Length: 183
Image 1: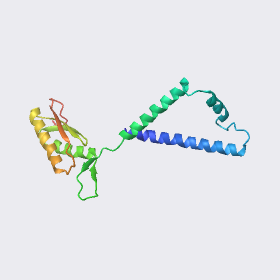
Image 2: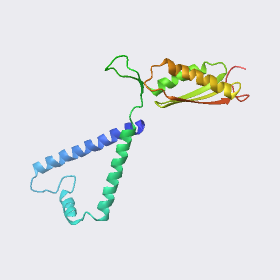
Image 3: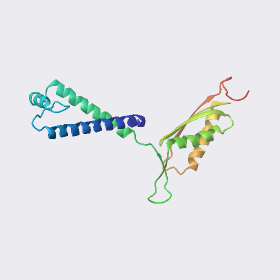
Image 4: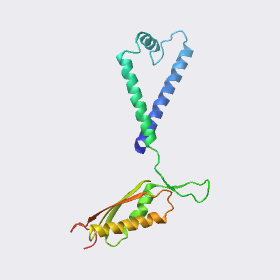
């Protein structure tokens, strides 16, 4: 969502700036020739006549209103969902807020899990609510899962997390011939 917000923000800003420039051009044109009232770039007189004759219940007006409401809801949803999802840590003193990014937590857990002897590969996804570890290695999946869970729990215990995330570990055995190490 943040990528979408980073794309939408300049586009909406450019549209608002273009409307502002258009308004300035039209105002200057109206000041220089006050009697015409037709508008330089926008046919204001035609729009006014159309606005006076079209009813609010006409289908084009209703469709324009529906499109405007849907666009507003989409922009509102993108804005609300694009917030940072930092993980809160316990504050060392009152009035001080400490947080870390989920990526940092995932790197810490991942490096600890990858350091285990039977683990050949691991990927970690972290959020404020959960840490998901996908480990691949030699040996039984149950032993691999238990070792990875213990390593992940050790990292979480060492950090001063305000709320401890749930740990989920998925372990799969290494398939013969898929190791990327030296043979």
